[in-house]
Image (cartoon, rainbow, N blue to C red; front, side, top):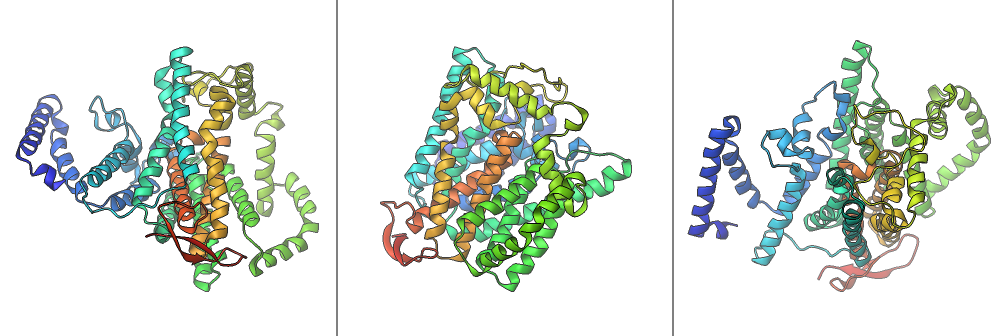
Length: 516
């Protein structure tokens, strides 16, 4: 970059552009006239940094700041992390008041860091490290995703005459997913970065847990107010990732240090989940534990859990029966399970909002079961829903169940194209776990599986496909799994030499990949 700017015509042109932009803002918008100079200085600093450092900083910031698009604290409080979250996730035109910036800083950073990396590679500038290739099936699945989005855009907008403005936000985060995976693949060296990523997740979880508790205890309750959540709905995925990070670290390496770290961090995260009060968070956590239990081989610790389960099994029906009638205290988990099955309005003789919405979306899908209706289309209301347009104007374009929404708007073909990569990721995660020999690597695979479980649950239950936080977490999980799959030989790559040994879990020594 220094070589690029050292060229006199380039330097003078950029300097003239900077001066012109500053003078123009002095006339049109004096309050932000200093913005071009600040951006120029920031850009200069960014261009000197390794992409790895920039990307990990971006990820750490994204999992910690307020997820402003989902209205944290129900809009009743702006935490110290509100403005950074607004800057990162909201269109900059709304943040800075400058027209024409219809995209969030996260988009700019993703594309900018990738462009910087490509420029360095093209000019052989050795600032960034070697990038491990991802498994081909995963790459193909991530390429099919934008191709499917494009087809559904053509079908919905140009063939069926849909709303192009709304369509963009139906697929925006899904379209960003392959780019984020590409960026994370460039930034991460491999499994040696798992510890760093885990710490970022734990810090993000604890930060949001304390902020959520502060909001409920010191702001909401003294005013006699009740809110459906403290931070945001999507933070459930972050909490699950944080819990599984400390739990699986202890499970794979059951030392005293890991045990007490698990106890302390889990207590903080469970506090955050309690105040956030999202049923889906508990469901995703339990499903993640079940997935980990099914994946892991027999071990002394697992046998202890099995024996404990056998001892407690005769008491489970009584626990379930009592909790079904009195879902409080130690029977609270039964209450959560019951509310998930029955909905919230069954006792009032009414259908739950989500059940009505699901029936409407299924009806819409049945009209076009193979190809769907495309983006920019509403789902049909055969059973009228309560009008919530005052709070969410485009609610008919964004059903809470994103999976059924994909079926309605894309049919079986569209859903397969949009979600095929998840099947590949699950396959690689399980295969990688059995090929990895380091406890931290195996724990990383189990955490990645938990993120996949939480993401799919969030898509099924609460608009997970349009969540920035969910997209970032699943992109990081898929990247980590892909890297370890390549390095361990779970999916061999021609660019990796098979020279070192790996001990499969519960198996014999086999050959695996190592960087040349």
